[in-house]
Length: 497
Ligand code: NDP
Image (tube, rainbow, N blue to C red; front, side):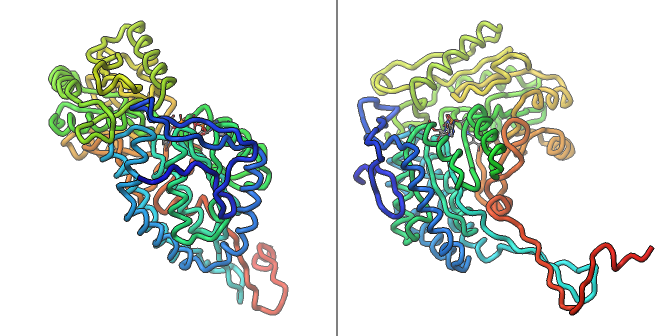
């Protein structure tokens, strides 16, 4: 097994934090399993890391982009070779089952190869000039030092959505993983080192929200990319706005699945089990609201409850486990709080609502798959992000009502509709207020080469993934080449009044 890599990585050197302060990282499925003590980095560490990133920027940004792509390809190769090892450690640290963490690493692999290929496609435009003997074009330049702050639920995939396009474009990076997933972050950075990424191009500082804040507030950080809660994202947005930094925010979700009367219920049930209870419901894209037509409501809910009750809960590195723990005690308390809220609001607790008992779950922070029925659109459990295996079921009687309910929230990340009517599916693509809509598939399952992000309270207009993220990590410069040999005045010489 890999030794625990519990240090910062600054200017190509693995090192302890400046103050020596640490925080403890434990296995959420087996709380007695301490993974290690990690540096609680302070302002001094962040400053060192930003300085390292700044000094690496000149040579890294001057390297031909396809040569940067060669390194990204090597990163993809090493990730492929270490897939199981990384997945095992990730499951141990944040809980989702081994088959899911393998998917997490695969997403990073796909992102590495995709970013490598994009280094040959960092296109600008050539544009006709309004003047004779003049040539206009746009070119793209890197921004500088990027601060990358990520959540714990996709500890490898999500950082790579940010880091790979950032470095492909010639930027350098300071990366702060979540304090719930520092080891996965360190193992990822070790892959970069082993692939020959030059020192200082990606620096790692471990720590809590205070470390993240120091990074966001550092005057020499030019751009910030953040994934996490809407509450934290809003604070980061305020700081970045005040300091004139570019920033990308990917935040919470309360994702609806609409099921119409003509839907294939077998497909719906498989989709719901994966969408609502995959990653123990702790995904920004989790299906947390089922908006179902009254004609199929009872049958669907009955069959779903039977299947959900049978989900095998346990430590994700055990082969039989289908659903792992909640990340920590705080997460568990929040879920329990919302179960109480739902009951007080008058919803019916159909299944779950409590911590499971038994030998394989007694040492971890587990929660049962939970379904509330008789939920109405304005209840808090229909509108607020719970971030756990809790599904709120809302009955509707028409397509129009389904869309009204789906849009009745402050978030707008992912969404789904199940119908066999092609016209309805196309209407829904336009009517649902979300950054992502799945037709006949659950709300989760992004592909690396597609834009990913949300509208309303989920995001601030940027996208990760796909071709769009390359816009975030570059500045456009407009270049005018005048070869007329005389002064030409745009807007003046061409129009004689
Ligand atoms: P948090 O907002 O608590 O934390 C996210 C990251 O921000 C962590 O690294 C955290 O550090 C850091 N942080 C906390 N406070 C500050 C601050 N003031 N300044 C800078 N950084 C700070 O989110 P969670 O980790 O609990 O993740 C869950 C949330 O993430 C959910 O709301 C989920 O929906 C969202 N999410 C969104 C995704 C998307 O793409 N839209 C994808 C995945 C998750 P630390 O935790 O170490 O204190």
